[in-house]
Image (cartoon, rainbow, N blue to C red):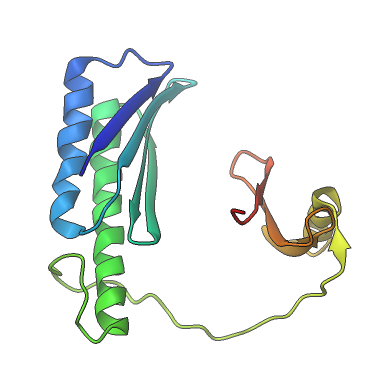
Length: 171
């Protein structure tokens, strides 16, 4: 797996870059068909943030950890991604009858739950601003809607920083 390490507001030393690269490459044993791993190391208000994104056969594994030490943040985000990779392998194994796995499984994994409810929503076209208003009226953290400009289903969501995000499908 190719690993690309980038830094923002941080002195990206060779040692730190090497540490992140080596840790992320250890995920190779859990993944097959993984694309280029993107590692972003940032310092924001004194917090050391390690973000890793890895495309794997149509799925995306992503993790983010904020801490007081960048090396520890990298170690923790790789642990998160390892758990995600194991869950992905378990799902692939369960849904393909064991014919496809991305890695060997180790130990029991937490139950992922099952689909217990299906909801429908009106297909009234609206702007993202209208959708945010609707989302806040129903006190949810996300809201699916038909974008009036594109006539495509989008999702607005409340971010951890209090701002909003918009999810749009690729064209």
